[in-house]
Image 1 (cartoon, rainbow, N blue to C red):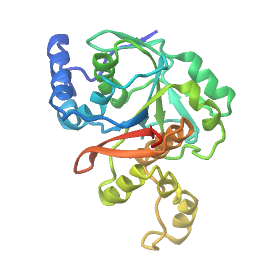
Image 2: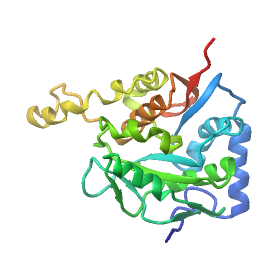
Image 3: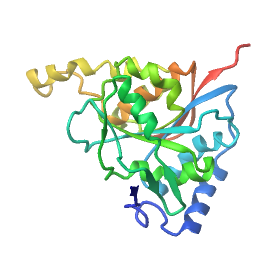
Image 4: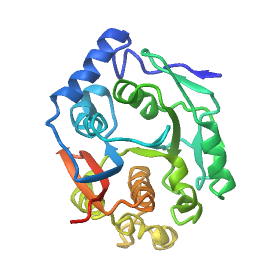
Length: 264
Protein backbone atom coordinates (compact mmCIF):
# COMPACT_ATOMS: atom_id res chain seq x y z
CA UNK A 1 0.00 0.00 0.00
CA UNK A 2 1.11 3.55 -0.71
CA UNK A 3 -0.04 6.70 1.06
CA UNK A 4 -0.52 9.27 -1.69
CA UNK A 5 -0.12 13.04 -1.15
CA UNK A 6 -3.12 14.90 0.20
CA UNK A 7 -1.67 18.40 0.60
CA UNK A 8 0.31 18.89 -2.63
CA UNK A 9 -0.62 22.17 -4.26
CA UNK A 10 -1.85 23.60 -0.95
CA UNK A 11 1.00 23.27 1.56
CA UNK A 12 3.78 22.92 -1.01
CA UNK A 13 4.30 22.87 -4.79
CA UNK A 14 2.70 19.91 -6.55
CA UNK A 15 5.04 20.20 -9.54
CA UNK A 16 8.18 18.09 -8.85
CA UNK A 17 10.58 20.57 -10.40
CA UNK A 18 9.24 23.59 -8.52
CA UNK A 19 9.04 21.57 -5.31
CA UNK A 20 12.65 20.42 -5.50
CA UNK A 21 13.85 23.91 -6.37
CA UNK A 22 11.97 25.47 -3.45
CA UNK A 23 13.30 22.95 -0.92
CA UNK A 24 16.84 23.35 -2.26
CA UNK A 25 16.53 27.13 -1.91
CA UNK A 26 15.39 26.86 1.72
CA UNK A 27 18.44 24.73 2.50
CA UNK A 28 20.90 26.76 0.42
CA UNK A 29 19.71 30.09 1.84
CA UNK A 30 20.26 28.94 5.43
CA UNK A 31 23.52 30.09 6.96
CA UNK A 32 26.24 27.46 7.14
CA UNK A 33 26.30 25.78 10.56
CA UNK A 34 28.19 22.93 12.16
CA UNK A 35 28.31 21.13 15.49
CA UNK A 36 31.50 19.97 17.18
CA UNK A 37 30.46 16.40 17.69
CA UNK A 38 28.10 13.66 16.53
CA UNK A 39 24.65 14.80 15.45
CA UNK A 40 21.91 12.67 17.05
CA UNK A 41 18.73 14.59 16.20
CA UNK A 42 17.38 17.80 14.77
CA UNK A 43 14.23 19.69 15.72
CA UNK A 44 12.50 21.59 12.93
CA UNK A 45 9.15 23.43 12.82
CA UNK A 46 6.02 22.52 10.88
CA UNK A 47 3.33 24.27 8.87
CA UNK A 48 3.20 24.98 5.14
CA UNK A 49 6.51 25.13 3.28
CA UNK A 50 6.25 28.90 3.01
CA UNK A 51 5.82 29.12 6.79
CA UNK A 52 8.42 26.69 8.10
CA UNK A 53 10.82 26.23 5.18
CA UNK A 54 13.23 29.11 5.89
CA UNK A 55 13.78 27.99 9.51
CA UNK A 56 13.77 24.25 8.79
CA UNK A 57 16.47 24.83 6.19
CA UNK A 58 18.99 25.44 9.00
CA UNK A 59 18.32 22.03 10.51
CA UNK A 60 18.25 20.08 7.26
CA UNK A 61 21.42 21.80 6.05
CA UNK A 62 23.32 20.12 8.90
CA UNK A 63 22.46 16.73 7.39
CA UNK A 64 24.41 17.54 4.24
CA UNK A 65 27.70 17.43 6.15
CA UNK A 66 26.89 15.19 9.13
CA UNK A 67 27.76 11.50 8.66
CA UNK A 68 24.68 9.42 9.49
CA UNK A 69 25.33 5.74 10.19
CA UNK A 70 21.77 4.41 10.28
CA UNK A 71 19.64 3.44 7.29
CA UNK A 72 16.45 4.40 9.15
CA UNK A 73 15.35 7.98 9.72
CA UNK A 74 12.64 8.54 12.33
CA UNK A 75 10.28 11.47 11.84
CA UNK A 76 8.36 12.45 14.99
CA UNK A 77 5.26 14.54 14.34
CA UNK A 78 2.68 15.89 16.79
CA UNK A 79 -0.84 14.60 16.32
CA UNK A 80 -4.12 16.08 17.47
CA UNK A 81 -6.42 13.54 15.82
CA UNK A 82 -5.23 10.13 16.96
CA UNK A 83 -8.10 7.80 17.80
CA UNK A 84 -8.06 5.11 20.45
CA UNK A 85 -5.50 4.94 23.23
CA UNK A 86 -3.96 8.42 23.59
CA UNK A 87 -0.81 6.86 25.07
CA UNK A 88 -0.04 5.06 21.82
CA UNK A 89 1.99 6.43 18.96
CA UNK A 90 0.73 5.87 15.44
CA UNK A 91 2.32 4.80 12.16
CA UNK A 92 0.50 4.72 8.85
CA UNK A 93 -0.17 1.12 7.70
CA UNK A 94 1.17 1.87 4.22
CA UNK A 95 4.43 0.37 2.98
CA UNK A 96 5.51 3.71 1.54
CA UNK A 97 4.64 7.40 1.34
CA UNK A 98 4.48 9.12 -2.03
CA UNK A 99 5.50 12.71 -2.58
CA UNK A 100 5.67 14.55 -5.91
CA UNK A 101 9.39 13.69 -5.88
CA UNK A 102 9.23 9.91 -5.38
CA UNK A 103 8.26 7.09 -3.05
CA UNK A 104 9.91 6.67 0.34
CA UNK A 105 9.59 3.34 2.16
CA UNK A 106 8.23 2.95 5.69
CA UNK A 107 10.48 0.93 8.00
CA UNK A 108 7.87 -1.46 9.35
CA UNK A 109 10.46 -3.57 11.19
CA UNK A 110 11.41 -0.54 13.31
CA UNK A 111 7.76 -0.08 14.29
CA UNK A 112 7.63 -3.76 15.27
CA UNK A 113 10.74 -3.28 17.42
CA UNK A 114 8.92 -0.53 19.32
CA UNK A 115 5.95 -2.78 19.95
CA UNK A 116 8.20 -5.59 21.22
CA UNK A 117 9.82 -3.09 23.59
CA UNK A 118 6.45 -2.23 25.12
CA UNK A 119 5.70 0.94 23.13
CA UNK A 120 2.26 0.41 21.54
CA UNK A 121 2.25 1.47 17.90
CA UNK A 122 -1.19 1.84 16.33
CA UNK A 123 -1.19 1.33 12.55
CA UNK A 124 -3.72 4.02 11.63
CA UNK A 125 -4.05 6.01 8.37
CA UNK A 126 -2.24 9.34 8.41
CA UNK A 127 -4.70 12.08 7.44
CA UNK A 128 -2.56 14.90 8.86
CA UNK A 129 -0.14 17.10 6.87
CA UNK A 130 2.99 17.27 9.04
CA UNK A 131 4.75 14.07 7.96
CA UNK A 132 3.81 14.62 4.31
CA UNK A 133 5.07 18.21 4.33
CA UNK A 134 8.52 17.15 5.57
CA UNK A 135 9.02 14.32 3.09
CA UNK A 136 10.41 16.54 0.29
CA UNK A 137 13.05 17.92 2.68
CA UNK A 138 14.11 14.39 3.66
CA UNK A 139 14.20 13.27 0.04
CA UNK A 140 16.18 16.28 -1.22
CA UNK A 141 18.73 16.22 1.61
CA UNK A 142 18.96 12.52 2.47
CA UNK A 143 17.98 10.77 -0.75
CA UNK A 144 15.78 7.71 -0.24
CA UNK A 145 16.29 6.35 3.29
CA UNK A 146 13.94 3.95 5.00
CA UNK A 147 11.96 6.11 7.36
CA UNK A 148 9.62 5.61 10.27
CA UNK A 149 6.89 8.27 10.59
CA UNK A 150 5.58 8.30 14.17
CA UNK A 151 2.68 10.57 15.10
CA UNK A 152 2.83 11.53 18.76
CA UNK A 153 -0.23 12.53 20.83
CA UNK A 154 -0.06 14.83 23.84
CA UNK A 155 -0.70 11.92 26.20
CA UNK A 156 2.09 9.65 24.98
CA UNK A 157 3.82 7.64 27.72
CA UNK A 158 7.18 9.40 27.72
CA UNK A 159 8.30 7.50 30.82
CA UNK A 160 8.08 4.07 29.19
CA UNK A 161 11.47 2.31 29.51
CA UNK A 162 11.08 0.88 26.02
CA UNK A 163 12.16 4.18 24.46
CA UNK A 164 15.68 3.75 25.84
CA UNK A 165 15.77 0.10 24.77
CA UNK A 166 15.09 0.86 21.10
CA UNK A 167 16.82 4.25 20.78
CA UNK A 168 19.78 2.88 18.83
CA UNK A 169 17.53 0.87 16.52
CA UNK A 170 15.46 3.90 15.63
CA UNK A 171 18.25 5.63 13.74
CA UNK A 172 18.51 9.37 13.20
CA UNK A 173 15.74 11.49 14.75
CA UNK A 174 13.95 14.38 13.03
CA UNK A 175 11.39 16.00 15.32
CA UNK A 176 8.80 18.33 13.80
CA UNK A 177 7.52 20.60 16.57
CA UNK A 178 6.71 24.25 17.16
CA UNK A 179 7.34 26.20 20.33
CA UNK A 180 4.16 26.91 22.32
CA UNK A 181 3.65 30.69 21.93
CA UNK A 182 2.91 31.25 25.62
CA UNK A 183 5.96 29.29 26.80
CA UNK A 184 8.32 29.62 23.86
CA UNK A 185 11.34 30.86 25.79
CA UNK A 186 11.00 28.24 28.54
CA UNK A 187 10.66 25.44 26.01
CA UNK A 188 13.53 26.80 23.93
CA UNK A 189 15.79 26.74 26.99
CA UNK A 190 14.64 23.21 27.86
CA UNK A 191 15.62 21.94 24.41
CA UNK A 192 19.02 23.61 24.54
CA UNK A 193 19.67 22.07 27.97
CA UNK A 194 18.31 18.68 26.90
CA UNK A 195 15.93 18.91 29.86
CA UNK A 196 12.87 16.84 28.99
CA UNK A 197 11.62 17.05 32.57
CA UNK A 198 10.76 20.73 32.14
CA UNK A 199 8.47 19.73 29.29
CA UNK A 200 6.80 16.77 30.99
CA UNK A 201 6.55 17.71 34.68
CA UNK A 202 3.03 19.04 34.19
CA UNK A 203 1.50 15.71 33.20
CA UNK A 204 0.70 14.60 36.73
CA UNK A 205 -1.40 17.74 37.27
CA UNK A 206 -3.82 17.05 34.42
CA UNK A 207 -6.40 15.34 36.61
CA UNK A 208 -6.19 18.06 39.25
CA UNK A 209 -7.19 20.71 36.70
CA UNK A 210 -10.39 18.79 36.00
CA UNK A 211 -11.06 18.57 39.74
CA UNK A 212 -10.35 22.20 40.67
CA UNK A 213 -11.53 23.77 37.40
CA UNK A 214 -10.06 26.52 35.26
CA UNK A 215 -8.22 29.38 36.91
CA UNK A 216 -6.93 27.15 39.69
CA UNK A 217 -3.30 27.70 38.72
CA UNK A 218 -2.85 23.99 38.00
CA UNK A 219 -0.67 23.55 34.89
CA UNK A 220 -2.32 22.07 31.80
CA UNK A 221 -1.13 18.92 30.09
CA UNK A 222 1.73 19.55 27.66
CA UNK A 223 0.75 19.89 24.02
CA UNK A 224 1.57 17.30 21.37
CA UNK A 225 4.38 19.60 20.17
CA UNK A 226 5.90 19.60 23.66
CA UNK A 227 5.54 15.82 23.82
CA UNK A 228 7.46 15.54 20.54
CA UNK A 229 10.20 17.82 21.87
CA UNK A 230 10.49 15.85 25.10
CA UNK A 231 10.61 12.54 23.23
CA UNK A 232 13.26 13.86 20.84
CA UNK A 233 15.38 14.90 23.81
CA UNK A 234 14.95 11.53 25.48
CA UNK A 235 15.89 9.56 22.37
CA UNK A 236 18.82 11.85 21.57
CA UNK A 237 20.17 11.50 25.11
CA UNK A 238 19.84 7.72 24.87
CA UNK A 239 22.03 7.99 21.76
CA UNK A 240 24.63 9.93 23.75
CA UNK A 241 23.61 13.54 23.06
CA UNK A 242 24.86 15.96 25.73
CA UNK A 243 24.38 19.30 23.95
CA UNK A 244 21.49 21.18 22.41
CA UNK A 245 22.00 24.18 20.14
CA UNK A 246 19.53 26.69 18.74
CA UNK A 247 20.22 27.10 15.02
CA UNK A 248 17.54 29.62 14.06
CA UNK A 249 14.34 31.06 15.44
CA UNK A 250 11.47 33.24 14.33
CA UNK A 251 8.66 33.48 16.87
CA UNK A 252 7.40 30.00 17.72
CA UNK A 253 9.31 28.46 14.80
CA UNK A 254 12.78 27.22 15.70
CA UNK A 255 15.43 24.73 14.60
CA UNK A 256 17.78 22.92 16.99
CA UNK A 257 20.64 20.44 16.82
CA UNK A 258 20.96 17.76 19.51
CA UNK A 259 24.41 16.23 19.48
CA UNK A 260 27.18 14.45 21.37
CA UNK A 261 30.00 16.92 21.85
CA UNK A 262 33.58 15.86 21.34
CA UNK A 263 35.64 15.66 24.49
CA UNK A 264 38.30 18.39 24.80
